[in-house]
Image 1 (cartoon, one colour):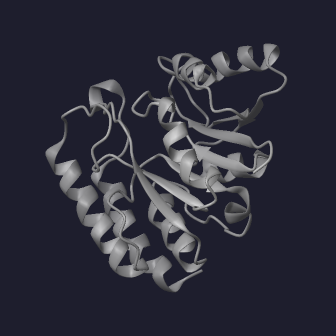
Image 2 (cartoon, one colour):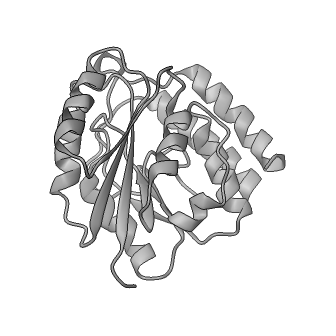
Length: 234
């Protein structure tokens, strides 16, 4: 492949404590290609918006989207994908659970011409993993199993944040889900598109709820519904 650009889409909601550090981590990673930052604030109320507006003043080459109403991660990603102009697009949460140093591992199958979509996996080994939330891991494994049954993929971590796509994959997908139902939806639609999907191990620095973790059991129920819904609905 020739020169490529990586668009890093960062959905942000009430991440004042971590967003600057996360951006520093993203900028520090050498991926041997141009990086485009796309920051989407989903109507934060903790001062994050003000931090991002300050950054916007001094970084005209970054892209910023400010939602006027809180809509959820899926809606933020939908906005971010519209702004992304890179050949490859990766999703990056703003809470420091995921390490941008893993970008090169995610990129390798795409650069090698083998993959159109690459998922990270917190359950394949690899880097450091915080030991936390047994029942969350049980729920993740259960949802991944059901998703695999509906899509005929053999992923180990459908709910993972780190999903990387060649831009043409996203250009052909219409995202409907506004919250965390995005994960099973995008997985089902990728599977229907017959794209080449790879998975690579990543590190994981999990947060607990006192650290600001947002996903709840209600999101798990919605994910369950979405797994079956998007098996049959485009």
